[in-house]
Length: 129
Image (cartoon, rainbow, N blue to C red):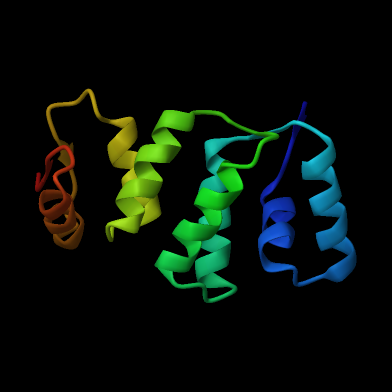
């Protein structure tokens, strides 16, 4: 198994460099790959900030990627929950943070939009300090 970096996933999803995209595709088709949660977080940021992907497009792309046969995730349950919440309107980083803190009584944040989205979709409680 090989660990992969953000740029491999980005090449695969964006196909912005034909040679590197082909190499990324061949790698993921030919090897089992391990994806740390931090790599997915950075991938979402790159797709949103650098490539201008909309959140719904990112959610679809990441969901398709993590579902590939040879992709192994550091924490599949955390990622699945976070992607589901992202598809319901939550920021991916916020979703990862909240899902990771699921055993806590509440998640504390000054971000009122985050708290409102969490309440709307029925996630664990997000409250102000």
